[in-house]
Amino acid sequence: MKTPNFKLLTILTALTLFIGTFMSCSDDDGPTANITVNEGPSGDIGGDFTGNGGNTSRIINWTNNLATADYNADITATANGTFKMVVADANGTVVLDRTLNGGTEPDTIDGVTSSGEPGNWTVTITLTSFNGDGSYSLSAGN
Image (cartoon, rainbow, N blue to C red; front, side):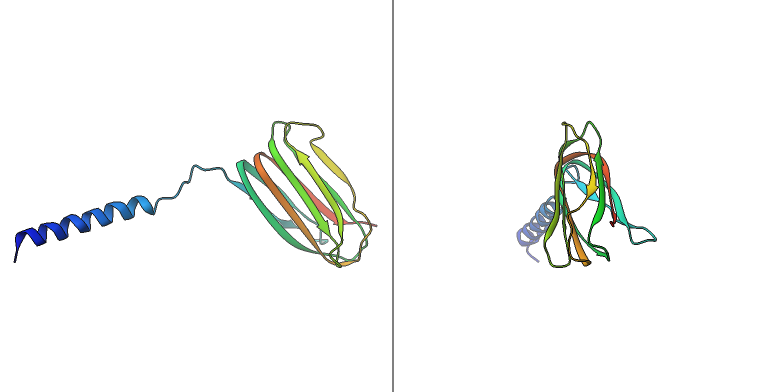
């Protein structure tokens, strides 16, 4: 057995393992954001959201058998970034498009969506550079 080839093979193997170890590490300290969804017994939906400067979006399919929905969302007063909720009816028509901007008033939105087609609605929640926490809810309207 030739010693130089064995040494070269050993060095290359060690170098490959060393580089592979560092390449496989992820940046766990980067900005994150998270949106949870809870469904109530009467078909209402709601949840919480948090972030430390990250971005995320979540699409929720929701059955609303009425033409409107009551909505509510709030963020902590010290939050930064944006929270956006867009609701589309069963025909895909947008019946709500509201945004909360962190660090400004208001820090709460609530009300009733525009009238839409009952059925399978789509709720899209987007957090952009969001740092803080909050909650949201939707329930069938009148």
